Length: 278
Picture 1 (tube, one colour):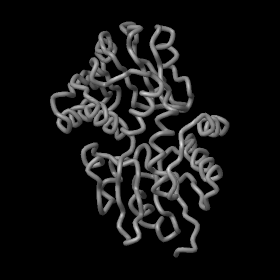
Picture 2: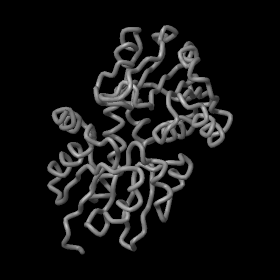
Picture 3: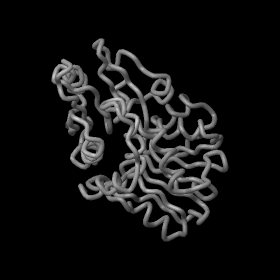
């Protein structure tokens, strides 16, 4: 077993848009490490079976993306406190003892990205509006609360999913009906899109942004395209905008370290490696 090349990858559906393979392969080449990283498109009904088969194929771990982040927790034998708090996992580590460890690095990646793109930003300095209530939203909300946010306004097309996050995180998260989402952003300090709206091949971003103020920092976790319709409209309104590519880069740092034993650096070379693969 020690002679095997360490293999890792990302699981999701769809997965063809993922830039994770380009990023991890760039770091493998940069640090001269053996191994490889690939993408696995897996249907929801097949997730558990596929995940339990991967260690037998020499895979040491996988990143997890839409729509499997919540379901990944149920497959794991061990779950970190962070993933438990979030209620979703974006990282599964296949341990030497045969057990599967679930973790979540989305919040780490989100905070590192927005701090780099909007110097001086702090979650606790004003209200935050969050669009979406999936696995990524859970990681973002947990990170916002950890960074001091006390007024998080959450809107999702399916209200019951948003209400589940309110129950999970408490009164710091207030649910706003999707039809009023455009109104809730009028006095927020930060606007975060965690939905797939505006992503290449997904639904258009249709939320009205007439109430958006230039003082609002706007970030989108979507990174294909890099300049999403939300970011273009926010930029036109005078807002500081932060694209989603940096979140991908930063959340991958602890994953790569767990997979291949070296902590990589997020720099222009890493960003360009991902962009050149687009």
